[in-house]
Amino acid sequence: MHRPVLKLPSWLPVDGFILALVGTVGLAALLPARGPAATVAEGASTGAVALLFFLYGARLSSREALDGLRHWRLHLTVLACTFVLFPVLGLAARFLVPEVLVPTLYTGLLFLCLVPSTVQSSIAFTAIARGNVAAAICAGSFSSLLGIVVTPLLAALVLHGNGGGFSAGSLLKIVCQLLLPFVAGQLLRRWIGGFLTRHRTVLGRVDRGSILLVVYAAFSAGVVQGIWHQVSALRLLCLLGVEAVLLAVMLAASSYVAGKLGFRRADRIAITFAGSKKSLAAGLPMASVLFGAQAGLVVLPLMLFHQMQLMVCAVLAKRMAAGTVPVARREGASAATPAGPGGAAEATAAVAAGQQPSGPRT
Image (tube, rainbow, N blue to C red; front, side):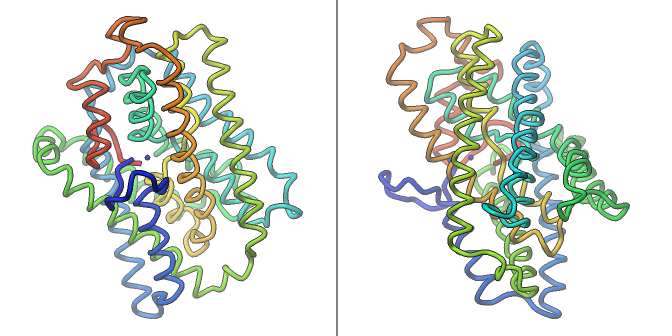
C-alpha cells in the first residue's frame, strides 16, 4: 500500500499508483522544471508535504491507537523489524558498493530501510490472510507516527556519510514540514474528522496528487543536475535483485521471530505483513526534505521496493488464506476483527475502494 488510482484489469499485477508515479518520472525527464518554474515547483512541493502530514495527523484515530496498546508485545515486534532489523540489513548491504550498487542507489536502499511501515496494504493483506486486522491497523499507525521522529534520527546516525543526515536546516525543515502539520491535524481532528470521513475518496486523490507533485519536483531537480547519468540498466537490475533478497529475508525473519515469541497465528500474520513493508507515502516527502535535489535518485529504490512488496504479498496472502481455516473459527472472532468500528471485511472493502480505514495512506 492497494488503493489503485486507475481501474486496472484484475490480471495486471501492477499498482495503478505506481503507473502514475512512472508517468510523473517520465514527465520530469522530458519536461523538467527549470529556472522560475523550478522555484514554483519547489514551493508547491513544500506545501504538498505539509498538507500530507496534516492529513495524516487528522486521520489518525487516537482512540484506536489507545485501544491497541494492549497488544504492546506485538507492536514492539513490528517496530523492531521496521526500525532495527531493516536498518541492520541496509547497513550490511554496504559491501555491495561499488561492485553491485552505485553509492547513490545504496543511499536510497539504506534510506528505504529507515522509513516506517505501511498502514493500508498491511491491513488489506492481513485481512485477506485472515489475520489480526486490529493489530495491523494499530501497528501500522504506531509505525507511521514514530517514523516522523525516528526516521530522521536514524538518517542522522547512518546516512551522514551517504549524502543525507541532519543539519540545523534539515532539522528545522523536519519540524516545520512534517511534525507541526501532523500535530495540527491531530489537534483539529475533533472538528474535521467527520468531514475527512465523508470525503475520504476525494481527499485520497489529494494525497496522491501531493505525492506526485513531490516526485515531479524531486526528479526535475535530478534531471537538471544530471544525476541520471550515474545509473545504467544493469545497475537497476542489480538493485531489483538486492531488493528481492531484502524482501524475502524480512518476510521470513518477521514470521520466524513472531513464531519464536509465541504469538498465535492471527498475530503472526499481522506481524509478517506489517513488519516487512515500507511506506512510499511517508518516505517520499521525508526524502525530499532530507536530500533536496538528490532526492530523485535516492527514492528510486523505495519506489521499486513498494511495487515489489505489493506483488509478492498479494500472492502470499492468498496462499495463507487458501491453506488455513478461517482465523475466526480457529481462534475466536476477536482475533480477526478490529477493536474499533468495522472489521476485516470493511478494511478490505475500504482498500479496494481506495479509502483509508485508519492512519496515513501508504
